[in-house]
Structures are given as C-alpha cells and as structure tokens.
Length: 396
Image 1 (tube, helix red, strand yellow):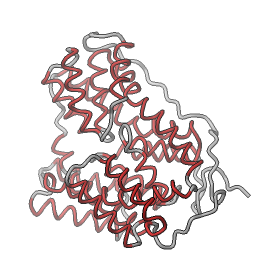
Image 2 (cartoon, helix red, strand yellow):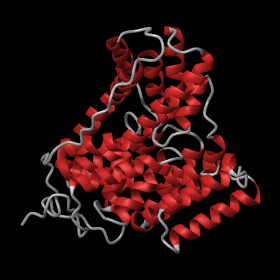
Image 3 (tube, helix red, strand yellow):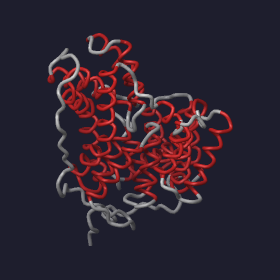
C-alpha cells in the first residue's frame, strides 16, 4: 500500500503549503552561506519533521553541487521528492524569495542614497551562531550517515580536500567512485538496502504551485540593456555557474564591467549587499538587474541566472527516483554521503578564523551550541541574540 504524499520513511505527513512555508522561513533566517542554510534545512526538516531520511537529504546536497547554488538546489530536491516538479519549484522559489526581496530593498536604498545601509555590525554578530548551526548539523548527520570505517575515512578525506579548497564537484565525484569500489562497506551500519518499491514517495506534481504577485515599482537606474538582453546575459552565466557562489563573483565582475552595467565601486558594494542578506550570493544578479531596470530587471536577471540549475536539478531529482535503488547508483551515493558530512565540517573550520574573535566570539559559539543541542532552542531566536550583540558591539 502506498503511503500518503509527503510521507517518507516513518516521519509525519507534511502538506505542500506547510513545506513551502518552512522553506520561506529558512530563506528568511538563513544567514551565513550555503552550508549554514543546509544546517537549517537539516534541523527544521530532517531532524524535527523527518520529511526525508538523512541519507536521501545528503544525496540531494551532493547532487546540488553540480550546477548553481546548492542550497537552492537542495530545496528544489526536497520539494521534488515529496510533491514532484511543481513542489520542487515552489520550495525553491519560496526559499529564494526573502533574499531577492531584501536585495531589491537594499538596492533601492543604495542607488537612492549612494551608501550601503549600516547593517554590517548586526550581521557580524551572527557569525558564531552560524558556525554553531553548521557544527550541530554535521554532528546530527554524521551520527546517522558515518557509521563504518570506510565512511569515516571518506568523511575525513573530504574534510581535508575541502580545507585545501579543492572543487566540491571533484570531491563528490571521487567519493562516489570510491563508493562503487567499496560497495556495501561504505554504507552506514544499520541501513541495509531497501527493496525498490519500499518507502518510495510519489513524485507526481500535486496541488497549486506557490505563486506570489509583486507590484512593479517605478523603474530606477539606467536602462543600459533591454529586459531580454539582461535575461540572455544572465542565462548564459547560469550555464557556467559551477563550484558555488563565490566562483560566480569573478565571472560576473568581468562580464558586468565589460558591458558597463556596473562600475567597479558599484560591483564591490553589490557583493557586500548580497552578503548582508540570507540566501546565496548569486542574488548579486538581483542587484544588477535592479540597477538597470528596477524591479522588473531584478526579477528577470535572477530568474535567468537560476534557470539552468533548476532545470538540471529537476531532471536529476526525477532520475533519482528511478535510480536510487539501483546497485551502482546506491554505492555511488553511499560514497557521496560521508563526503558531504566532511564538507559540512570543513565549512565551519574555514569560516572560524574570520569570525571568532576574542572571548566574546568563542563564548557566543559555546552558548549557541548549548542552546541548540541541550535546550533545543529555535535557531531564529539564537540568531536574533547574535544580531543584537553585534549591533551593540559586544561581538565583532
């Protein structure tokens, strides 16, 4: 007998509106970059609501590294696994919406008053909390996914290569090939392969997509190119968006300055504004589009940049449903799973030197870990505390 839509494993049913609302909330508080957002997703959707098994969630994170921002791709993967193509797109758009709207607001303030809003101090106080979220997620996922000696070695190897700044795609492909060689030995103990039809969620799109209207503000800024030109330029960039958000920065810098769409000063400030928002740094496209054609340009640039990754991730999500129980695919993803855990740990270690300053920073990290793990506080409250401490100068 098939289980209800939105049900995986033994977890509770979650409706599409509830799932979309959760991604909207994660998108609004997901400061700190891709792995911090993955940590929030793991806590809110995997640990608390159990919408997917941990291994399957980690598979989605791994597949999401191929093209485009992997946090957006992971949101699409989760929605697609539970509610098909429309569910995947609804979750991805809900997740991106807060960042896009915030960048539009900040871009309007910037181009109106020629200054970045003074938010850096408050954002600076979020750093220790973000590291705590990442470490907590790594521990939670690792306990369930890294339970054999080969998987421990794979997680450690992925951690080391990530610290050496090796491209994530290379790490994951190598881990998958190692998983095929190791076979069952890479699989976590206590997680035997399931028959092909067991616990398989339906993936037929059901229910309405999450559509939201936005009133178009008067066009602000110069019209250096038409909407179709803006969309075409960012669509082409989207096809080479490999390796994460910061790989996109030099590509866009060269392209946008050559076109004369942003001055060097505006580009630098656009990167800073993108970093002040939750979600991916790729919302730099939103900033640029607003500069050229106001809200219409912002939405066109954003949608064009993300389209190639969304198409590819939708295709891979559907293929995952077909292949996930095939022997070689399962072994491949068995190698990817511990590698993703190692990469999550590396994100915390790479962020720490630039974030944890003095006793105050380390103290906030320890308190955040305690509140998250021992007292099960919601991350939003701890992030609010960090922002308040940063705004008052108690944490830098």
